Image (cartoon, rainbow, N blue to C red; front, side):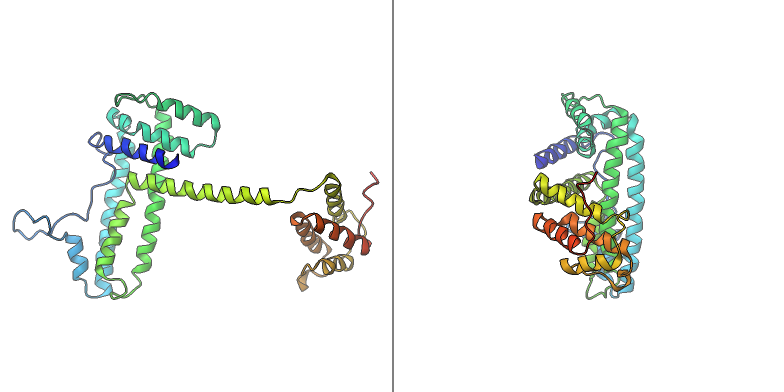
Length: 305
């Protein structure tokens, strides 16, 4: 379902090409410009100026000089593009072209169930390429989400480039540097932002599913075992006068809990370790802790209210 949504958004984006100046999907490329040799129309197979500069670099210093200059140029046109994207709010064809994208991304990034339902319902208004887009939804949800995704994507690629700039020209030749520049430029496009959101959402979903599995794997305790666990926890509170450092060390030793030397005279810190152990243990562990507390004369009478 997630990939179907991304495909739908991508198709809507491609269909909208040619509308407002910022909807073309990204800033103009600074890497496609051919070499200006005064020889007229360049061949389609002619290397771009950026590619030629990097291939001609003989040292890492020369390569890095070209990279630094090209990165600045890419950043420059990207900032202009983002500014245009925000300023194009008055252009109706831009709103029409991005409406499906707005609803899809905003629905993905919104927590409220009701809000998601509203975005899904709004999607049905897209008919014949005409849409009525709520300006708050479009600019506060979609544009901000897309720009954030592009910025994060660009930052990852930029970091990789800057790390590679520390390498020698043999380890990081000009052809590899040019590919990285292309990747950096692509990272600042709407399609790259969509892919980034999809990949990020996939990672979040995987983490959530793993967390859910951990929750399901927790051993269920009977009411009696829950009471026993609660009693052990109460016995470790500072209000228990029998909770002394020597007694708690005896409990920790019985359970195999390693107490740092610096904490062995601190009843509060030892108790915190034991509470953590008690929180994560199973039914058998609860019984072990209860017995260890009783043997050390720390266990309180939980029947007395």
